[in-house]
Length: 84
Image (cartoon, rainbow, N blue to C red):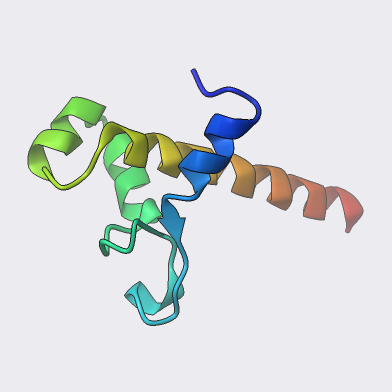
């Protein structure tokens, strides 16, 4: 379980946005694995263990960071819609 404070920030620190990497899409630790593609694997039914076996340079915390990034993004998007 992700705690509401410190762990969340350390997980989000794994997500990098750099215009020189994958056209500025959020990626995991600068490794060129986009958050979007990893979320698509999870949404498609792949388990965390499946993904880690397929991509051995990823860590469990990287996938948790992707989920946390998505959750934060949804909150921002929802707030934006509420204001509009």
